[in-house]
Image (cartoon, rainbow, N blue to C red; front, top):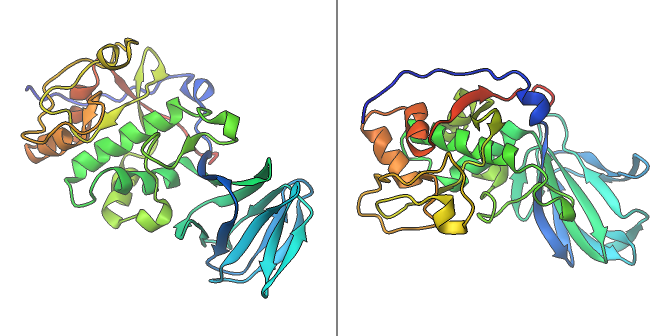
Length: 290
């Protein structure tokens, strides 16, 4: 495979076509109770009135349950009604918030929907990716493979903003969209992969592409038409370079094992991506508003 120089195309109008602001990740839906907390003292805020509901102590867990059309929070062993169906928990400066026994950057939104709770992590795109890359690819793998993963995941996220809008968020935190482990999953190496590719996305015909990927394709990737019936021109069938690894996933787009094997051969992230995604260009999505 011939190596090639990288040309990054800064596409005018990309930001207006695909704004890269904060992303909302669904952590829990239809929950009968949720446990939340903060790394430092902060406040639980009524999102409807912007007024403080109660103070939250640092490093302490709090249980919230639906109560009729509002919620209730457990304080000192007793439940107290929160006269709101929509509350926000923001961490102190440089702090974290917790849910699902994990730490997260950004802030939490907790909503009563039909007497069940929905928990959403509103987080900056780059901080979101810091929780995605180590959840989708082993942090011990080659840095260039991790960088390719960061760009693919960023592209997928931006192309799919609003995918789960009917639930009140953009994407789930599971492999059904992209695995996301929050700040708890972060490592210094995967954070470096995100930071060194900050804002970079894959585009085709001036649009950010939905850069599908899977663990391995079993020797040959497949087109989206072969798998799903809809043809995406940037997704062609190519040898997947994943050796003897059994197919794991849909086999469309980048093989993660293949990306790591190519990185071991000396290919950089941009060469890896332009191998698995055909006729794509690179652009930088500006997330200065995140």
